[in-house]
Amino acid sequence: MGQQRRVLALVTAVVFLGGCGGGGGGHGSHSSADRVVNVTMRDIAFDPSAVEVKAGETVRFVFHNEGQIRHDAFIGDEAAQAEHEKEMKEAGSDGKDGHGDGHGITVDPGDIGSLTHKFKAGDSLIIGCHEVGHYAAGMKVAIAVS
Image 1 (cartoon, rainbow, N blue to C red):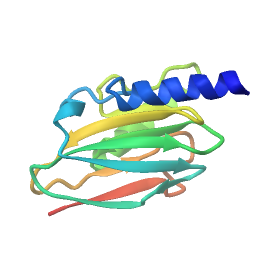
Image 2 (cartoon, rainbow, N blue to C red):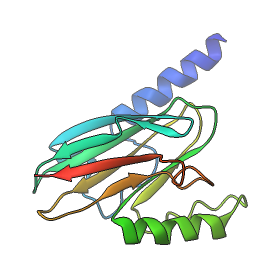
Image 3 (cartoon, rainbow, N blue to C red):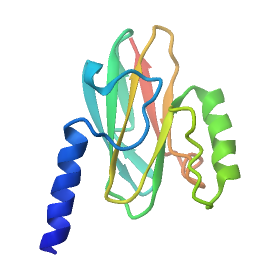
Image 4 (cartoon, rainbow, N blue to C red):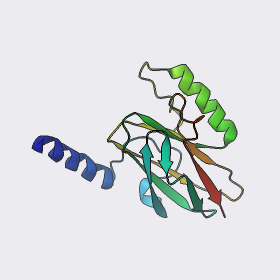
């Protein structure tokens, strides 16, 4: 158990010192974020389920998977969410994560990942989990841009 704790502490240090797991390409650098929002992933729920951001603000979302199963986090509007849902179904369980575009990440149980996004006025975006059945069950974060 002691070895596992040391490994977890090392991984946590790497993540918080700039070696963030997961994607983020195309969303700005982690160091340029105006704000960090921590999001807990639980089995079929994100906490918080809604976030307010300002137009022009760059936000780094740090996802902590405290659930027992793998979760996905994808930033996009409703059309992009629908397309990503389709991609994730096609990827199936063969190890592909369907995140080639940098708008999403997959986070295994006990792991941490992050996505950084700069918001524009008029954005109507959602963070959704597209593991099979999760999005349909309501695993979403509504993003209000002011």
